[in-house]
Length: 177
Image (tube, rainbow, N blue to C red; front, side, top):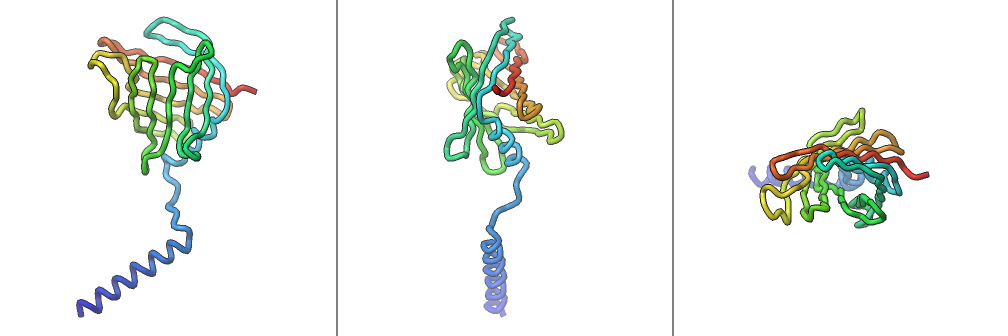
């Protein structure tokens, strides 16, 4: 009887796997995947402005978004005075959307998307861990928010923490024509 039940179970699993293979075997698109596709659509050149509240400084900023890794990652270069001074790389990690921020402060916060608002196209990230952090008081990005306002407008907000203070910094970008 046990052999008979084992054979039936094996047959059910085999038929189910074969049916899934015949249908392409693709799971339904996840929310993270949908959001990642919105970020991929940013590919191109952007211009706008930044405002660093913590340093009381503002000015012009350009950005360049491009795909790498055969489309598995999106690179965001934030450019001032013709030089990239910050870079972020967005990618999927299973069902999670991740970002690594290569900071002008010399460290690399690794962030995970914690919430998405599909209606307003807002995705929020929170730091999971960080590399090259010389001390707990060193300045670093803790939170990131992307507001994908339209295909031609982006607002980036990030919380910068250091020396016991925090400030929310802002970047406004429009797609170059």
